[in-house]
Amino acid sequence: MKDTQLAQIAVTEDYTGAIANPIYLSTAFQHQGLGQSTGFDYTRTKNPTRNDFEVAFSKLEGGAASFATASGMASIQLVCSLFKPQDEILVSYDLYGGTFRLFQYYEEQYGIHFKYVHFDQYTEVVDAITPHTKALFIEPISNPLMIEVELAPYYELAHQYGLLTIIDNTFLTPYLSTPLEDGADIVIHSATKYIGGHNDVLAGVVTVKDPDLVQKFELLHNMIGATLSPFDSYLLQRGLKTLHLRIDRAQDNARRLAERCRTLDSIKEVLYSGRTGMLSLRLEKDVSVEKLLKFTRVCRFAESLGGTETLITFPYTQTHVDMPDDEKESRGIDQQLVRLSIGIEAYEDIENDLLQALNKSREGVIQ
Ligand SMILES: *Cc1c(COP(=O)(O)O)cnc(C)c1O
Image 1 (cartoon, protein in one colour):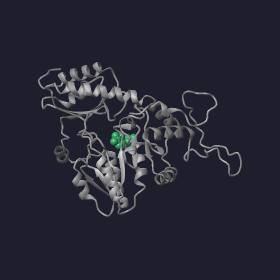
Image 2: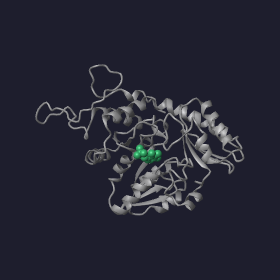
Image 3: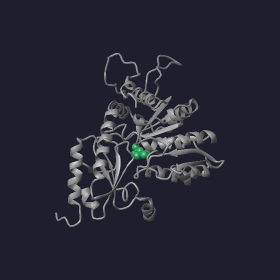
Image 4: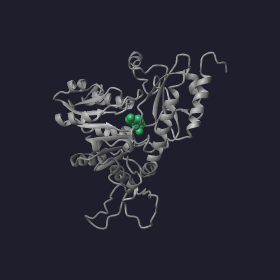
């Protein structure tokens, strides 16, 4: 676990002594003379506020450079830009829906192949490698089943075959896991989730340590142009200041709730990796999901995660709507499964809310 405060100290020179980082809205920066630059020329290329966040984030990740983008998907698209037609990428079977959709598009449009494998089954992954394989793309905690994959064997495998290891670390954040320090090449975050942390900024970030990749991403980030705005960069930096506190609290709340839910006869199964604030509940047949989503007040029915508020989603018709029903059922994503992103509210408020809603949602209960 890292000291998220230390990485915060602004790197841009500031003569006012401001404790909170300044927001530089300027898109253009004046040159002192021909061939001279302050280090800032044009905001798409480099902006002081975005740079402050990127430098702080790199420090937390143990990387050499970070690239903040306008959304998590823009970060994933940035990474896709590294590949050529015929390249093959092995991808987590349980993948974020938006990433799956983007990969499908790249497959159809550009002939980059994405092969879905179970990273909890090592030999299946090894067998899937061909001379065209260029990378592994892994979500370390599967969604919504919350199964954590052990990454160390894949760093070794990737090294052996000369593959890039790309980790979507959105669920864990650098506070709980620093894949670059362990052997990964590229780390992606949807910073919309825990990094921003307040459900009020859409953002992504790519972090790398290899100088060659730093150079490539500097080029691509500026060329494609889906860079993060100064104001949103400021919000991410502000989010970083409380990341450790928010994760500690959300994780603590989630652990207590998981334990409590295991004792309830309205809940058939609790799916929790033991880390993060993400947990899924498989409800007994006599509990109506529709009613539950209506009767919760503290836990709100909305489609995101990693924020201060506790949110509930229904994967069957939300995050996994594009997946055929039989495929969903076979993966255990059935119509009694709800996913919770536990927030930082007082624990009792979350528990009481869930219990009252569960009670009202059982069959035979008249409203
Ligand atoms: C939300 C999410 C994304 C996409 O990020 P956006 O900020 O919504 O574009 C990618 N991966 C994971 C694991 C996510 O949860």
